[in-house]
Image 1: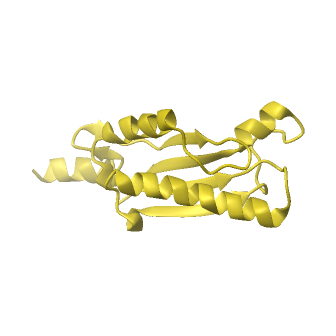
Image 2: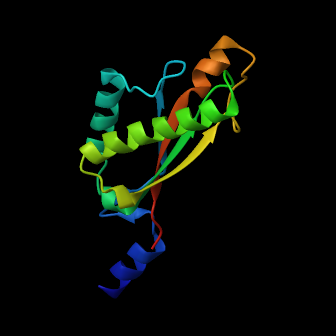
Length: 134
């Protein structure tokens, strides 16, 4: 029994024989929008439903925009996108206190905002499911 406890402690990213890995899912938005389309909501629901031992994860929301429009608008839009995703997660019975968020607006683009494709990919919220280390 003692060896089993040591093994579980040593492998802190392991829960009941299942490896607990960090996973990031993204939800993409139309320009100027914080609306989550039904298909993306369903895909996130299916994904969350299949996470075993969700209690071993913290959830981090990172909201982004493209660079179209002014700072104030993009900060507002980034916040509204975070709120949309948080509300969706809460509807999946995930407690709000388990969710942390950071709104980046257009300050941390992952893609080139000088192209249509880059702007399209920057209009997103990344949802990080990060293992909790005990």
